Structure formats: structure tokens, C-alpha cells
Image (cartoon, rainbow, N blue to C red; front, top):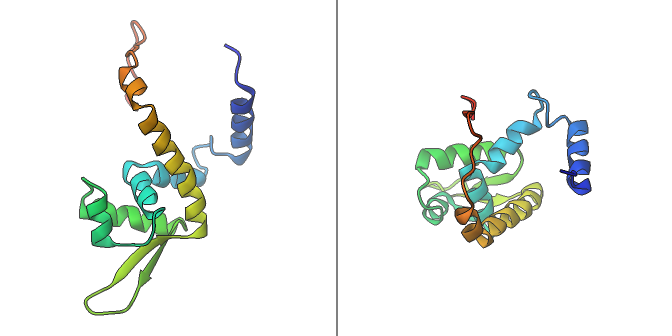
Amino acid sequence: MTPDPLAQAMLDHLDRADVMVPECPSRLVLQHLTSRWGVLVMAVLATGTYRFAALRRRIGGVSERMLAQTLQQLEADGMILRRDHGEVPPHVDYSLTPLGQQAAQHLVALVAWIEGNLPAILGAPVTRSVGRTAPASA
């Protein structure tokens, strides 16, 4: 199979950025952004500012603990702005930073691509290597 030149150029660039090296700090950011809840939080916040409870209602199935953890990770990565209004009861809202807006564009495009291709993805034949099992870490 001939490698796609664009994909190869991207991988060559990624190799220079060290994302392929286990110790690369970008891997942690990649993990936060592409986790199940990270993608969904970023996609929802791409539509505007949300308070915690409204964000949790918008993202079906996320626990309070996982949402809080995801928000903290994305805030630490500079993707999300947490604004505490200093009121009682607490009034805190979340929005994307300019960096987060850039990342969200790519994540929303990925989500749209997945949803647009879901019938083909779900209908894809399952292929397995004969006589081989998946590695334990897979």
C-alpha cells in the first residue's frame, strides 16, 4: 500500500513534535481532549457558556464526578475558562478560551464526521487477524 503523502507529512511533523514519544507532554493534552467526556464537553462549550448543572444536563450520561474532573483537566490545559462570580449560592460558569475554540473546531468536525458516517461505521465488517489475539494493553 502506498502511503498517502498528506498523512505521511502529518506523521513526519508529529514525529518532530515528539507526540510519538511516550514522555511527550502533548500526549496528556491529547488524552484530555479526545476522551469521551472531553470531546463532548468541548463540543457543547463550542455553542456557548454553560453553568455546571446545565452542562451536565446537556451531556447525557456523564456523572457529576467525571464532569468535574474533565472540566478541571481542560481548564488546566488552557482550553476552558472557569468563571466564579463570587456569589452565594455559588454561580460558576464555563466557556472556551481562544485556544479551546480552536481545538473545539477540530473536535466538532470529528464528531460531525463520525455521525455522518455512522451507518457505514456500524455496517463495517469486523475483521480479525487469524491466529492472533489483541495485546493485553489494547
